[in-house]
Image (cartoon, rainbow, N blue to C red):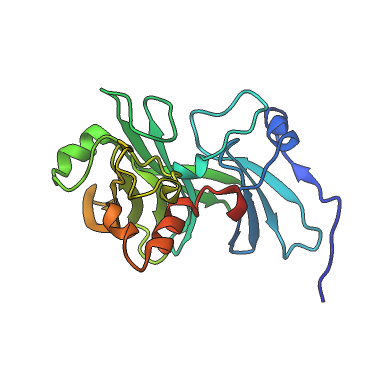
Amino acid sequence: MWDVMQNLQIHYREEELLDLLYWKTDMVIPFGNFLCWVNYDRGGIPFCDVFEEMPKLVYLWLPIADRPRDTSAHPFFDTKRSLCVTEAGLKFVDVSREDGELLGPMEPGTGFTITCHTLKISESGDMKWDKDFSITSKDWWACNCSDLLPRCCGLMYPLVSMDRPHSVHFLLAGQSWDGIYNVSTVSIDDESRDDEIDKVFSVSIDRSTKAVASILLYIEGERDLRGKDANMVDFRQIQQSSPELN
């Protein structure tokens, strides 16, 4: 039988109130005894220990530098941030671009920084984030010189492996793919168009060595749009960001 609990207490600091007043849940994650509601835009998580006799919500900020100061909603932050449950605990990955953009090619001369934090919970229940990995795109490219990887865009859609938490997966694409572009809106037989469908790669990074562990072709450009799996390829491009699917 389901128990419905209402009017749960929310424990938060004064400076966190604005987040809660303009809250939007991007996803809900089970972690141990907790349910976690995540907002990547405002950068916060209410935790609820569902096995407590009197459950409450405890609000915790994500470790981000570009915390919003206005009340507007900013979509597509799931392209650069991810909260992941692993066998080593709860991990948070952030890809911060120097040009401040979320989508599309980077401004010339700019790069990005990847950071990874792990949630630490003390015996008394206090929570804090510990940074356990950070690398700039300049240092990362110096370690990885593969000609297969385009360098005009930042890494997107980070995901930490559940059973191999030292491995982090990303999508990486060429200039004309911005992470949400629905390729089916443009006919592939239209010779007048001047854009092309880029290849999209799945890139895995070993955090212990800062090196690329694998490169897999995720979308093979226009070729994938002409085969029997064209609908699946189209769905891959919109599934993360389409409002109808969230």
